[in-house]
Length: 166
Image 1 (spheres, rainbow, N blue to C red):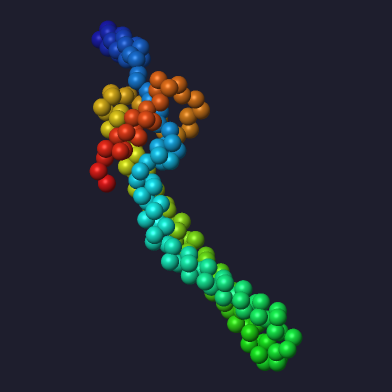
Image 2 (tube, rainbow, N blue to C red; image 1 turned 135 degrees about the vertical axis):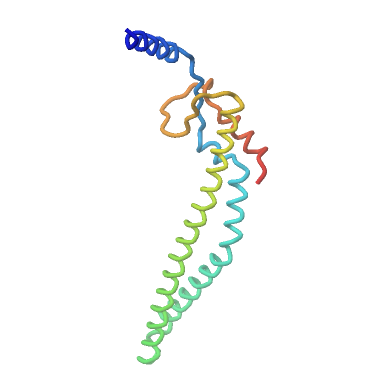
């Protein structure tokens, strides 16, 4: 008898919980990332950090082009030893350029991932704060096919992000 009463009370409580209204919201992470001032600052920091290496690559490329032009122009009148030395030098410069270019690309990608990982964590903090302040039961940010404007809290998250210290 006690088990039947406990089962009945359990079902009653479950039914009440399932009929309670949930407050659900959605955050468009891409929109927040695009408009976040922190993203712009991170981009500027990265440009500043990697622009010297980018300029160095451009200089290397111009040097290679200059040597190739000289080789094309003067190669016929050069001696075999000089032409062979110049070909080897051009080949070595091209290898060095490709290696430097690849290293720069890897460093930029690693830095971008680091910067945007930090930003993503800050956005999640801001979204959590908005969720708590506005008493949401559930906030979604990924793999949402459709959301009405009533549940879209992207603007509030963007505002919260603006007020958060860096």
